[in-house]
Image (cartoon, rainbow, N blue to C red; front, side):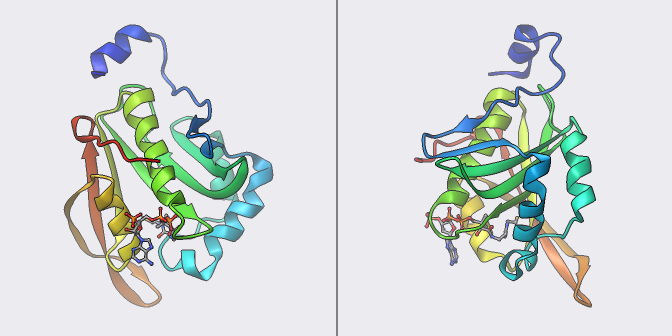
Length: 185
Ligand SMILES: CC(C)(COP(=O)(O)OP(=O)(O)OC[C@H]1O[C@@H](n2cnc3c(N)ncnc32)[C@H](O)[C@@H]1OP(=O)(O)O)[C@@H](O)C(=O)NCCC(=O)NCCS
């Protein structure tokens, strides 16, 4: 669907439709205030903290109130298993950022399913043109996931952030609407 199609169909719609989307077993719904302790605890687990920046609870809470941010809990059979955050969310957006994707039980295909939900939300619901993200260079699991989902590597932000007294590089990935591939759930 082109950006024009979306604008014509929903001329007065500024913000995204935030109904839950997903497959029968994996879905995503807007994060609630009552989820936030769980979100912060998951984010700070060592296996996640290595790869994602740490937000205080208040920063997550502010994100819930920000209409340009989609803060979602990822559920398997309605049980929370992870969360993801998208920014610059609006109908017909030129470029939407996947700010964060964290899954608790790893290696079971849940990250792949969550990423597919994000892609569908961005390209089908928003009619956006581009979905992009950055990832720490040493995050092999996530990089493999993004490549498998059809994201293209755009380049490296060399030593762009300081972590634990060292500089770390970030790799940028993106996908354009026309490049979206169907990933089996
Ligand atoms: C990255 C993350 C979201 C992936 O979710 P997941 O549920 O563990 O991943 P999946 O089981 O869906 O696997 C997705 C792909 O990752 C790759 N993968 C899985 N385990 C891996 C491992 N131990 N090493 C390398 N690659 C691995 C596989 O290529 C897999 O694709 P495949 O099914 O074609 O083999 C999750 O591991 C996570 O939360 N990690 C910590 C936080 C993080 O790094 N977030 C991303 C920041 S950009």
